[in-house]
Image (cartoon, rainbow, N blue to C red; front, side):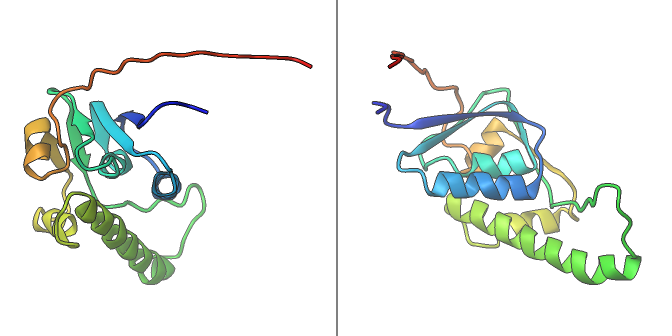
Length: 160
């Protein structure tokens, strides 16, 4: 059994898939140890939302790190979708997902449920780039520094 009291998640990412993010959120929510999220360099898109899932007080961001928040974009790989189908089903689904993940992010940061969704909407859905100080002002980051981590490791292997 590990003697650690917190799990650090180091983030330096251009972002990724909303469904992969959903899986990570579930893993964090079901973890028995608190999670500390640490942005080194960048956290964009899904990575920015993931950053907000660090325990309050344990979200760290390097002084020169950047965060970018944007609405979910739809990609269906190589398959083709009829425009009518895209407009009626995909647009509705993407909007539901946007409201959901931005609602979670808002809750994580101690804001009203529509806080981040409204911020993006007010920016005409443009990408929202924030530096570390701006992230602290919106309570996305709790600390503008990288934490000092001390790692002690012991490995025991036995064969029968």
